[in-house]
Length: 622
Image 1 (cartoon, rainbow, N blue to C red):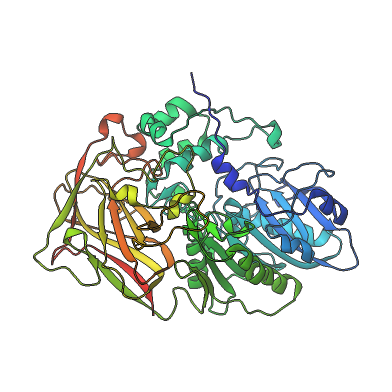
Image 2 (image 1 turned 180 degrees about the horizontal axis):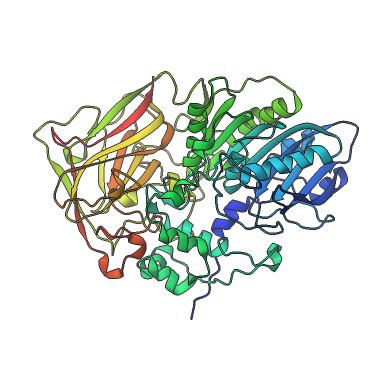
C-alpha cells in the first residue's frame, strides 16, 4: 500500500503568492472589469484567459501578460485576484492585465508538454509556446477595447520559461519581455538536474504535486493528485528510499509520465536538448530584461544563461538587461529583501529593483514614458552590499585569476610546487554529506547562503582557505572548478563550494532573536555539483579508470560578491550533497536503473602538486 503524502513547498514557491502587500480585492474590483475568454489558437484549440481591464476608459492602456501552468485562479468573472502584476507599482500605473492557462493546463484545451520545444520553421497548424503567445497577442490587440497596441510579458520560474518562449518570431505588438528566473535547461543547471546530477527533492516534490496529468479541463479545487505521503526528516526519508527505481515502485507506478521520462533519459539526449530554448533566441525584436537571484535555489542558471544567449546571438544594439540581486527564487517581488537567511544586505534590495529597474522598463517600452537609462547589467554585490551598473557582463574591468589548492588546507593565487601531493577522503553513499545543518522537512531556500561550519567538521569534506585578506577582493562573473582527481571506483560526484569566512571577532547581528553567531561564520557564496562521468560529454558518459589522475572541470554559476578585508576565501570539496542531489553509486551504471546493491564507497583524491594543479578560476573586478 502506498504511503500518504502531504507536500506543498515546491509548488508554493512556484505559484508566487508573494508576501508583497497586494491591493485588496475590493480595490481591484472597483477599478477593473474582469473578463474570461477562450482565445482560439491556429490549430483550433482554445486557451482559457483571464483579463482585467481598467474601468477608466478615457485613455488607452498597454497589455501586460503572464502565461502560466500554475493556474490563473480564481475562476469566475465575479471572482477577483488579490493583486495584479508582480509589481504593485504596475497596478498603480494602469495596464490591462492578462493571465492565461497554457495549453493543456487547468481550464485550457489541448495537451500539456513540459517545457514544450520550440519549432523554428513551423508548417501549417504546428504549434509551440511561441505560436500560442503570438495568437493570443493577436486576439487581444484586435478585441480588447482601448489597448494601445503594445504588449509586455513577465513571468517567474516556469512562467519565466513562457516569457522566454515568447521571444522567437514574436508578434510585432510584443515590445517588452522580462523572463525572471526562467526555467531553461532541466539537465545542465535548472530545477531537476545540475550538471547531470538529479536534484532529488525538487524533482520528487514537483512530480508528486504538479506532474500528475489532469484528466480534462479542470480547476484546482477539482483536481486530486492521488499521490500522498508524510515525513519530517528529509535526510532520513530519502536515504531510506534508496535507489531511484524505488520511487516508482512505492509511489508513481506508471501514472506520472514526466518521472518516467526522466528515468528513461539519463543522459543529455534529444529529449533534454529539444527543451533548451537558448539556440532559438535569435533575431529578437522585443526589448528584454532578464532577472535572477544569486541565491536562487531553483533557476539561477536560467537567468544567467538566457541573458548570455541573447547577448551572443543578437546585435549589440539589441536592448537586453541582466539584473541579478541577493535573492531567493522570486525574492525580487517580495516586499522587503534586506534580510535573507542570516545575512543583512543593508537596504531593501527588492524595492530598489521594482522602482528603479522593473517599473521604468515597462513604462518606457509599453507607455513611451521616461528615458531608456537601463544598463546592460545591474548587479548587487553582496559583501560590500551595493548595486553596481556595468556596460557588459562580466564587466570589462575584470580579470580572470586562479586560486590554487595547496597542502595543509591552504588556498592562494600562487601555484603549488612539485613537493606537494594530494588530499584523500572516503565518500560513502550510506552516509552522504548533508546539504544543510540540522533537520528539515522540505528543501529550504536558505541553504544557498548558509553557514558551512557543519560540513567542515566532516572527514569526507576537504577544506582550503586563504590567509586573512589584506584588502577587499570583489568577484564579478564566472567561477570555474578545475580539479585533478583520482578515484578508486568508476564514477563519483564533485561538489565545489566557494565560501566567505568571517573574522573570529565579527559582531553578532542586532537584534539577534535567532542567536546567530557571525564570528567565524562560513557563508556559502556559491556551490555546485558535477556528475563525474559527464566530464567530457553530457551526451556520452565515460567511466573513470580507477587510480588514474583525471581532470574534472566545470562551471559554477556566476557570482557577485566582495570578500572584505579581514575575511578569508574558502573552498570546500566533497562528493555528495544529500538529499539535495541524488546519491551517486560511485559505480559506472545508469543511475536511474541502479540497484541498492550497486552503491559502494570510493577513495577520492584531490591533487595539488607541481604537475597536477587543482584550482578555482575566478573573475576579479579591478
